[in-house]
Length: 176
Ligand code: IMP
Ligand code: MG
Image (cartoon, rainbow, N blue to C red; front, side, top):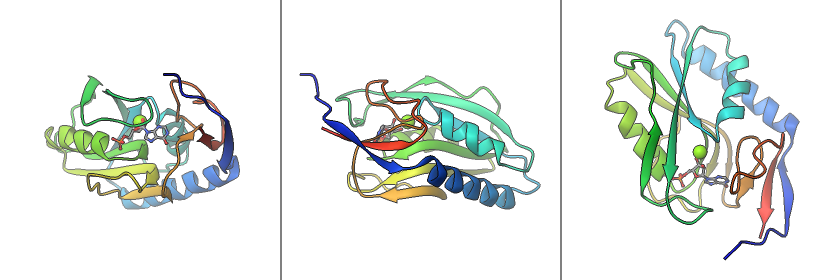
């Protein structure tokens, strides 16, 4: 059955996002001084966040991507996660920072943290723009968090609903 969208409510403005992203980038630049980290963006949702974040990081680093798909209903991920694109840079002995748009139930990040850890990085940390708490089932250590909120289905700034709304420059909550 098609889900009806009744409207959307502005949650984070461009300015709020920009301020948060540059603060995160500053912290990351400080913490990874001299470490030449590899930032791994999780496609597709993190593309805009990663692009803005990396333009504010003032130390040398490399970028790579992974893509994961989860199966099941459209507004939440099931436990069944599948890697559809792996990283290409060798990660053994490297300082790795995963960059994700949003942590919700936690299945996606649990899967990715285990997957990347198995490649033997020297360190592994996680940066998420949004930490959404209410539905969390798996404990996820998030080292750098932009915004924390309880619930709500968010779109914009990379986040989509059935591939819609991804390119909005602000973040909205969908009203169903
Ligand atoms: P989870 O933590 O396993 O539930 O999965 C997180 C993934 O589900 C994110 O990477 C998003 O792709 C998607 N997701 C979770 N909550 C939202 C939301 O509010 N808006 C858009 N995508 C979401
Ligand atoms: Mg995602």
